Length: 484
Image (tube, rainbow, N blue to C red):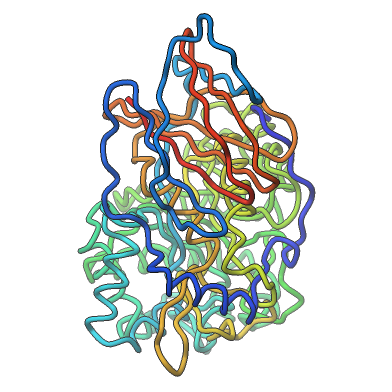
């Protein structure tokens, strides 16, 4: 791991936490007028602009700091050393998932409310989400179980139709891309059509090899149909969470390592290339602890000519496991593709430090993007046809249509608001324990640093060459610094 404390192993339920008490805290936050400041500003020479989220502030401008010569200065605080010349991966961006459930809830808002919400979430001058996920058919967060070709076996895909998505999902995607034309979309299936599987159902089970060819064409038809609707998809994963069928409790499909390799290198990759479809393929789309499988798949040169990227979830294992894959395959790209709050946790609205740490650890271990889970759910974590108790990045309250924001939302603000697409992470070292940090240089030369402090307030000193800067980190806070 490139600095920072290695995270402990998490289960899905440990990783996701949210609740009614959190909703009350979120409502209080709204009363404070808490939304990300629209004016990011430009620091003057030597000046460091500071923005803080803590118990009383939500991405608010704090007193500025400044770079000063270190010579002769008496410094107090733990030291973080910055090395801007030592650069790492390029950043693609940040976002959340357009699940069927999220898009349905958004469709229930008034036109004005929907426009305001999408402006807040996607406009480059606001939260600026720009790397988002869609589902190929139903996930556990859908209004119903569906695929684009359900029923009796149909290997020629004569019944294929995306009609389900035309009602509210595609309109939401078009609206988001209108607000942010740079929106990058990737898509994941939770299950192939039931007739392609050994158990004949979209709930659990595994894929039948005899339908690999038909399933590759299913992807092609999906990509072509979405493109015809004005929604281009830039990447796909071969399967959401390849290593579980969720015990048949929800749309899911188990894919063994050899199955995924064969499907990608002999079917999906070749048909995308033959059709001149530029959509990329990302592997795995599952937890850190499957790092060994990721290395084995990337070891296959036949697969690697079609797929050279890995999608990760953080429900089990630790982020430093991604660095093991990067060490084995330095040319491979890493993307963090799922994680969100849970409505059973009392800190749903205030757990920004947990998410700040999660995002930092992913970025310090080579991830190029961070994409959360449901963009929006109601106060009960619905619509939901699965067994998990996830909450949304924002909550749309079922009766009032009031919108409240999660702690994860505020964590995202500290990254997505100021770290631009094309930024490069650079080296930042120092401080043991709970405090973690990430530093990037934007394409325009501006430097951005995010420091997460889940513990008590403390002084820190930033050292960059012959310059130093001092600041105090508030308790339970995420702080973003910007300078030129």
